[in-house]
Length: 148
Image 1 (tube, rainbow, N blue to C red):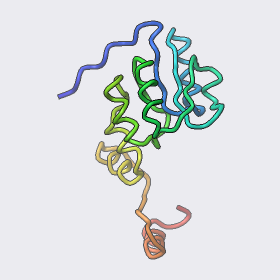
Image 2 (cartoon, rainbow, N blue to C red):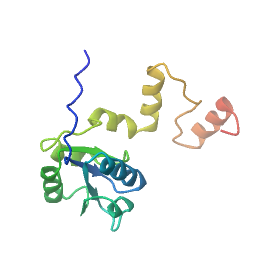
Image 3 (cartoon, helix red, strand yellow):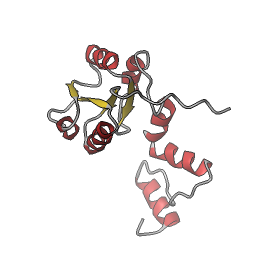
Image 4 (spheres, rainbow, N blue to C red):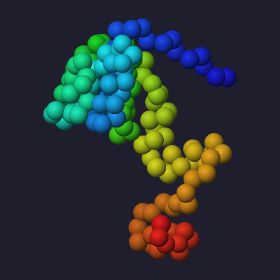
């Protein structure tokens, strides 16, 4: 059974974004045009999204205190890339809804799992193979061909 969609965010609500790169920047610009605020959580100094966001927290994804402060300051949380440690979500999910959810993050963090998921949805994926050593590479090149 499909879960109901969450209610739309009210004007002035704050979207918390894990990651402060170009996608976070574009999301912040779009959110602003919709009357929404953004709060970026980014380990690196001076992230691109920080130039347009309403607020920036500069801290590591393993900084529990900073994550808790961030999570209590936002209405909803998203991430702009897939390399977010799931331990950070363990802290944040008790403080604000996270979209897309944990399962989407898990799938996107492993390219083989991601391709299997996409193929399982009936969509085409490019030929691919798992390569862990030189023998795997040789076999993959023979099976898939070059250039690959």
